[in-house]
Image 1 (cartoon, rainbow, N blue to C red):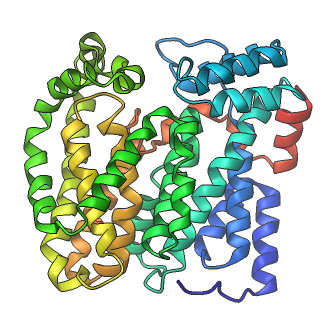
Image 2 (cartoon, rainbow, N blue to C red):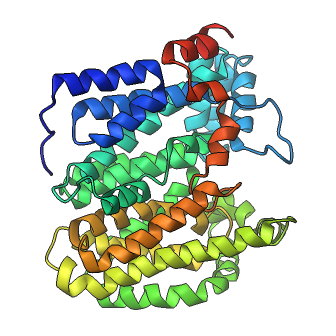
Length: 416
């Protein structure tokens, strides 16, 4: 990686002044000059502002059915709990008898000891989420190949597809950024001690036990490049067979049943994949198009491996991507499994492409990706958690887009 660029004091001052006027202005100024420390500080403060500005309804409805509503309800319930209840829940979790993870409970308990304001709770989640997001982003923007070209910014968007508004489901998506940060250190800097950080991810979300299995499988078969290329291609076409296999496996693996049994339930799968009305068929069609385009990008990597990837420090990331995307394709029909883990692949796809395939003849694929992002942004719903403008507008009040940070702090932290 390159070092941070030397900063012009005037440019730095302008960025902080713009942030002081409005967080969004500060964010946009930071995007122009990403290879500086001040830009990362601006981004961090911007994410914190989003965290405490999230406006979450008190109850779920058909039109507003965000996980964040449950998080708010659970947090406000914790304000009435005493310490004994927290430690009782912790004991159950350690004994594998309680919740599948314990990050949310720990967060609720710690914040509720000094405040009952859910805005502060989401601000703390933003602190943790954005820390690992930005630590991961350093690998991307400080690479010598990153510049201000359109292709680089489209890849940047792909890298950051797990955006700050995923605090709506902060357990899973915080665990994802921790995983990305740990694996980038292992793959790029060869710092194997960061595997210990990977061990923490099930504390944040129980499904990340699967990452252990995937990484172990990758480690044992890292030299099976050709086999994994074949497996990936096959997985594109056989994903529909996976649901029954997982159900059969769950009967013999209690841990799998405890953590994922609900996701494998026939009624749940039908309700998610086939249920609904109105635009549900549009959602399913666009999901298939999106995963198809991501698979196309992997196929382009396979085609270009010998000429552009082989012998580079991206070789192991390439193999890991094949393992991960084979798993994703195989489990894509299982709600909240393959459709979620596909986002884990995005930062690694962006990084390998930036390092090895950022050449003119491949730009057409990146421009196509950019068009897909524009379509997603304009949709009234999310596709595989790709952010849409409507999602931001539904969780942030209008004042966030024009008010100063001081006003927002007063409104959400002190006025309540």
